[in-house]
Every structure is written in structure tokens, then in C-alpha cells.
Image 1 (cartoon, rainbow, N blue to C red):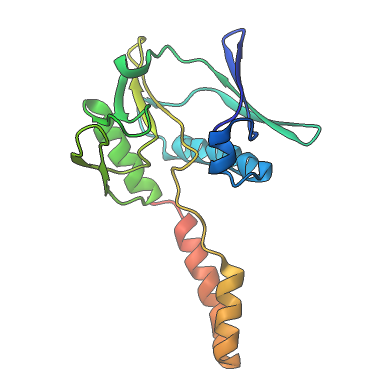
Image 2 (cartoon, rainbow, N blue to C red):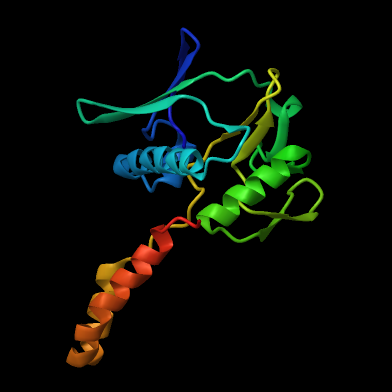
Length: 196
């Protein structure tokens, strides 16, 4: 998530806005999309907490809405950029790391939240790697020895629009529309249901 960033009292404040040219392009010049990305980051953090993977941590984070603006406040973890990075990329996929105990933890997380491994390409040397999450998700082994995952806004794929599916089905058959509603509910619930 782009936007302006400030540090105060060991708390990182990120404004979910479109201040730079990069974020204007990323969010099609629509600030509400930047705010949705911030909310997605919180949803993904909640999924990591619910997954309850031993020794996998996130930073204490909150989403704040003030006068129509969105702000994420997160505690600063004891990390050191590329030096503590063990999974993912912190430089837009120029270099991608996949090493150490974080690989097993992220694989466990992916299994619980039902994400499949996919191929990504490292931009510096064009090598292919397989990752379970988005390439910009960062997994760090902090200076304190704990494992952290950060930048989770794109952990989950975009949701399929059920309203469009309903209209599409209606255009073919009125009977199919009557059957489709329970099927849609079952599909949606199956994607949310946690594995035991």
C-alpha cells in the first residue's frame, strides 16, 4: 500500500492515499481503492492470527478512519530490510528470497487459508521461484529471533463479484437463477470455512 509514511514513538503511520505518482497509477487515481487496500491488509493480518501458526508473528496494527481519511498505525518490528528478509521481496521482485524456517511457516499458512503455490520471476536475473503468497509479502527473521510477516494487503486474491454472476445466470434461464442462489452461498461459505 502506497501513501505517506511517518514514524513517531516507534509507531509507523501510513496514510492510505494517492500522494505519489506510483500510487495514483496503482489505484487508478481513486483514494477509496487505497483505503480498501489498507482494509485488506488488516483482513489478511486477522487471517494470520486465526491460522495460529506457532512462532509466526505480525506487528500490532490498527486501521483508523479520521474525517474520511484512512490511516494504518503499526508497531515497528526489529527488522533490517534485506538483512532480515527470508521470504518474499522488499524491492518489487528485483530479488526474491525463500529460505529458512519461514518457508515452512508460510506453506502452513497457505494450506490453512487455501492458497496455492505459484511461480514468480525474480527481475534481476529472470530466475523462477514458487511462492505461496504474493511476491511483495515479506517474511523476516527479526533481530529478536522471531519470525514476522508484513505487507499482507495482497495475500488473498480479489473477490469474485457474485452480483455479476447472478445477473449472468438470470440472462440464460429463470430456473437456473432459482438454483444458483444456494449454490453461490455454498461456494462463498466453503471459501471462508477454516480447515480443521
